[in-house]
Image (cartoon, rainbow, N blue to C red; front, side, top):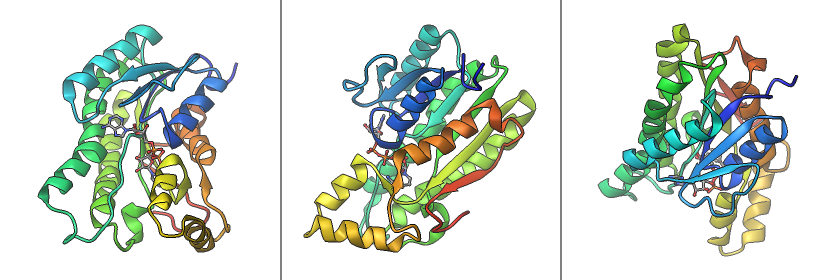
Length: 244
Ligand code: NAD
């Protein structure tokens, strides 16, 4: 039996990029997987697509309950939905700070709150939060985004401490620049997208962007009983740029 066989997983932001790659990998390895996303219309069998907005508590609760009903319980929560933000503290007003924190931080809190009662009943409960090297790298022009990911990192440690005695593990992954539709959209706004991509790649010690499937591999490891003695950690998937 594989370490993923029979696991029941919910992946937020699972319709695109890192979340999509994670949902597909877990399903390939034998897990039953539901995807919570603003737009799950492109998600098909064997994944179960659930439409929800992580900024809306009622919709999160409804999606978690629908996932639990369809999967017969819940072992794994991958808290992955997130949005980006550029600029210094002067470039984003209060509304922008509230909006990005609402998705990137409170979104994870809402999903965790809805999922924890179900995770308590699992023999292999694991929460994996998608953090970022931005949490600790001191990146320029990323004040708001970095602050949200710093909060995700602290939340991960605090949740790990709170729930370890209930048998629920909580870890995070810290991707570097990963080749996802998000980064594609960012590059599209550049004057010369190809040159901008080449510059991004040149900044990576590996000379290339991180693959979404490579982040998914790290998430799958932390989600499965393979990492059964690991909680309260962050796993960098950054091509050697920086760890936490
Ligand atoms: P992506 O834009 O390709 O996918 C994000 C998904 O989240 C989308 O399907 C989107 O619909 C969904 N989503 C956004 N807001 C939502 C909401 N309010 N409710 C429900 N779903 C919502 O992005 P990605 O690059 O795969 O990023 C996924 C995660 O990885 C994010 O948390 C991001 O911060 C993190 N991350 C990405 C990179 C990178 O370079 N791509 C690096 C470090 C961390």
